[in-house]
Every structure is written in C-alpha cells, then in structure tokens.
Image 1 (cartoon, rainbow, N blue to C red):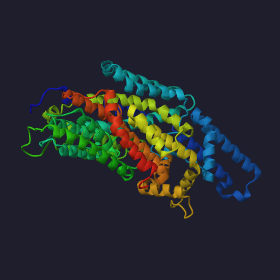
Image 2: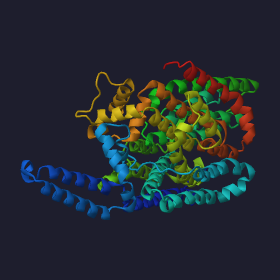
Image 3: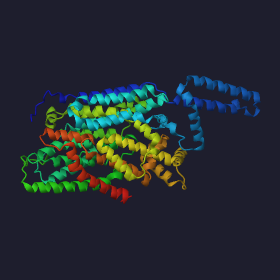
Image 4: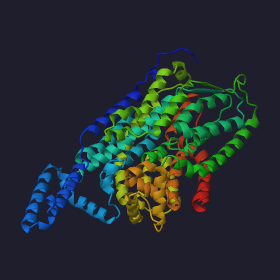
Length: 617
C-alpha cells in the first residue's frame, strides 16, 4: 500500500460532516424560532395569583376593606385576566383547566403535579406527551421492515434507493407533528423536535468515533494462534466500551483479517461480530447505540457498568471459550504461517487520534448544545457535547496523513448510510414512543425475562437502538401507572427545603431519592429534577425495578448479534470481510449455523442466572 497521499474523494471531510452540519444548523434554527412552550400561560396564571393575593391586603388596609372595595378589586382582577387571555395562544387557553388541575395537585402534593414543569426544569423541554392514534406508528414499522427485508430481496435496489424510504417516511411523520396535529400543535412540535435533537447527539457520537477511528492503523505481527485470536477478540470487546462497537470494529477488523490471511474462515469473522461488534460494548453508554440513547434519556452513565458487568463477563467468557476451542481444533489441522512475525508485536499509526477519542469521551459528559441554547448560554456552545465531537472529527481529518486512510480502506459510505437511515428512524419513531407512553399499561410485559426476550427478538431483526427506546418508554409508563403515588411523594421530598425524605418514607421513594442524590446531585440542589429523571431514579434505585431496565439494556445489545441487520457494525464488518475475499455466510446461514446454536444457548444461560435465579441481586 502506498505511503503517498492520493486524490481519493474519501480523504475529503465532505459528506458525513456536511450532513452533520446541516442537521445541526436546522436544529439550532428551529430551536431559536419562538415556539410557545406554555411559559407565557404559566406567567399569566402566576401574575393573576399575585394580583389575587393583593386583594387581601392592598396598601396595608386589609382590616378596613369594604365589600364594595373587594368587589372592585375582584372586577379589576377579572379584567386583567381577560386582557392576558387575549395574548395567550388559543391552544393554551383551551388547556387552562389542565393548568388549574396541575396547580391544585401541586398544593396537595398529588402525583403528576409537576408534570408540566419539565418544560422549565427538565432536560426534555416538552409538553404533556401527545396522544396519537396507533396507525401513526405505521411509517416506523414500514421503515424498519424495509431495512430488514429489502436488502434480502434486492440489495442493488436498496443501496440506491434507501434514502427515499428513510426521508420519505420520516417526512410524513414530521409534517403531521409540525403542521397537522390538531389536538395540541405546540406539544407535538416540541415532542418531534426533542427526538431530532437526540438524533443530532446520536449521530454526532457515531460519526465522530467512526471518522477518528478510521485514522488509526494497527498492525499486529504475531503468529495467528488460537490464543492470539482470542486475546484480540477480548481486547476488542473491552475497548468497545471506550470507542464504541463501531470504533472497535473499524480499528481491529483489518489487523484481525491480516494476521489470519492465509487460513481465515467465516467463523473468524462471525465471532468477531459476536464479541467486538455487539456483546463487548455492554459496559458504557458509549459502547453500543442503545445504551447511549438510554444515557440521553437520563440513565446515569456509570450505572450501566455497575449493573451489567456480571452479564457481560459471563457472556464473554463462554463466547470466547467456545471460539478458542473451535480455533484450536482448526489450528491443529494445519500449521499456520504468518509473514510478519519479525519486528514489534504491535505497530500503531495515527496515534494522535487517541487524543481526539479522549476529546469525544469528554464531550459525552458535557451538556448538549440544545441545553445551552435553551438557557441562552451561547458562549458555551463551543464546549457543548455535539460541537466538541464535531471538532474532534474535523481535527482528526486535518491532522491524519492520507496514506493511513488508504491502508484502512476508509470511506464515508457506512456512516452516510447510518446517518440517513437513522434520521428517518428517529422521526418515525416519535408516534411509537408517544403511543406507548399512553398505552404502556396494555402491554403484556410483566417480568424482566419477558422484557429481555421481546427486546432481544426485535433487536435481532430490527435495529436495536429504537427497540431499546420503545421498551424503555414502555417500562417508564408502567412505573408511572403503578407507582404514581410514590412519584408524588418523591416530588414532595425534592421540593422540601432542604430536600430529603423522612425515616418512615416508602422504601421505593427513599431508594429513588438516594439515586438522584448519587447521580444527579446538581439537579437536586438546583430544584431542576425532571419527571423523566424521577422515573429513571425510581427504576434504578430499587433493585426489583432495576432488573427490568437491565433486561432491556442487555437484551438490546446482546441480541443485536443474532443477524447481520441487528446492529450497524455487523454489516460494516461483513462488507469489509467480503471485500477482502472472505466468503461470508448468507443471511440465513449466519442465523442457523452460528447465531441459533451458539448465541441463543448463551442468552438463555444469562436469563436463567440473572433473571430467574437472580444471582447477585
């Protein structure tokens, strides 16, 4: 491979970053466009309440008020309210009764009293969840069905026309939410924009990790023994939690193929997909897209490691043990040769890109650019999450020599496909999330094991990130339905000065409060804990409820390995292997020869150990 720069278009920082820039610009522009979020109505109600209290003691002469004066003051208040109502949006006027109910509930500490406060203190900035009809989930189902089936029917057609499916179906949902949602247009606009903001955060992470990892070349100069291969898979599974399954797969798949060049078999690539591109990334939100979506929804960053490491360890130990036995037996059939045994064991080129990976990781812990925009903190935008990630990607491209990309056969094709498909997925899944929020009690999901298998089954055939979000939303809705009283008590504890729970508090309330203090201390002190934060805290702060989120999380990540379409890196690895001349199994060959006999027994073992026997719980 030449060390000279080329004029290949793959070296231009073009399409992926341009797409990212356009999405960022669109999101910022729309967010800066005034959308009534109910604050004006709240202000009007607060003003009216102040004036009403003024009737009690105008100018300090309350004891001498006459009935006529009281009547005159009441008339003045009514006139003021009428004038204010004229300035309030028509929809908000119609929902005045709901606001009154909210204020009354707040006075009595009833559950749901602070639901509307998310617009001010929460990180979602949304109204009450829009209530949509079930058929508005059809674009979501059609898009995911197309992603699963169309490549099997006609791959050439799909490669050329998938943007039409994604953008077309996404536009249908966007138009409905932005312009035609009659019941509550401001709420529907806010709900759709909130999910698109999360799309920007999602694609910023995946895109930046893909670009930066593409600027690193790793050469391994060792004989490809079973021990070497197993060690490489283990290293890949560990670093997947730092650079993501996409980053780890792109870093290691080519050196893995190179050291096994003379004798590589399909099972080598399949186990790489199992361990590095999927199961390995279970220990951090960076590791796999579903877990990052959970982090954006309020699941604490380090809770993932604390809760999931035993399942990760069991899965990897069994999986790598099976691989070692298979590879050892294959090695015994013929002596393996490697042409690069001399020299250093590992050589790394593009080492500066590890600094940019560190910058991306630092960005994960920064507030989103949208949070700074809502707060009017425009000077903080350069150090917001998405901007830091974009800076890391651009700096990596500018500082990496072109020959490194040549050695990695780097192109923007895979991340372009992910960016286009997911903009459609995020748009069309808004009605599904909203519908589940209102109908979660109707879902026939009662045990962690049921969540584990249904999340896993859908993740294996569809995409695991939206599947995770759907069942996370379902679980939160069930918590709201079953523990509404406890959530109300938790809100009272947070509203206390200083915040705290009594010794006789409900154990679930205490567990949730302690969790908020542990993971969201700044929000507790600032009084800005949102309803979503409270529901997540109620779940992970109580072990019996936390098992549901553990089941959703591990099911989405693990079962994504069951098919080529279960997780984005799967197809990337398959494509790279085939371009290297490796004959990969067909879709059904992959499922029936590898996934069903190897993965499913391991996943059943995980279910028995942790969701039936509840080891460590």
